[in-house]
Image (cartoon, rainbow, N blue to C red; front, side, top):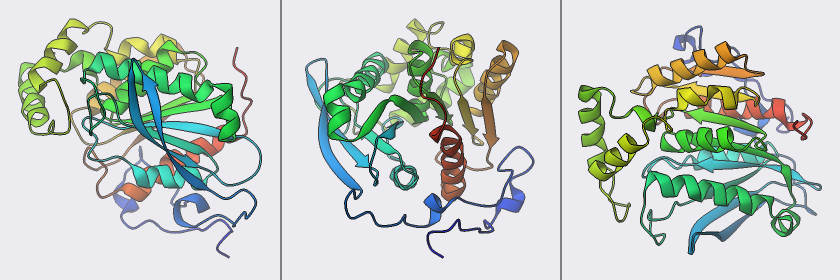
Length: 300
């Protein structure tokens, strides 16, 4: 029974509303361990990723089973107090490898943090995963690479997918629109105060510096403007009741206007970190990934 699809009624799902989870079932990966594969067991590798002279600390969750596995690059926010490890575990149980890493200048990784450097770090992580030697070592399929990010990580996931057509698909969860953090003076002050209290694990910058950097890149970093680049990829947008909701709605609208090939949009009545809807979040992401799992890897 444990290895069959487990059907559960999620407590609290009745209040999610029409735009949230359409089904009240979960795949096995969210709630149960997969069959044991003694020959090809799951594993975890503590590794480093090179980026511009710095070795970034990373954790690679490896799925069980023979053959090549697609990989999810799971990008955390700033500074990353919610690292979404529970989401990583569910994704691995669904048969994907999952890579998490710390950007330069965060959580003890050397270097100075900036939003620009985090963009570079994300691109270097993708390059690492496409390395044939790395792919062979970890039984990963470099042609099936999905980027999933939360908060600042959602912004980075969108940026990477918009600038790299080789990315298979992208999921943005409560993604902050960095290009517009300065747009509304009142909202700017709220964000600035919140960022100021959360940067202890971040080196070489301040909340004010990051907002100044965002102002310099306001046009290029407005993710609503990436809709044309993202429309050819499957996109998942997961919204919460937070300051990012309006911008994510705007991105969804822009994608539809541009004729997106595959957009899924979910809205969950919860806080920015999905504190009381972690199972719901895992279900949304894993069910979306299941639709990609056996899709052709090659892209035009």
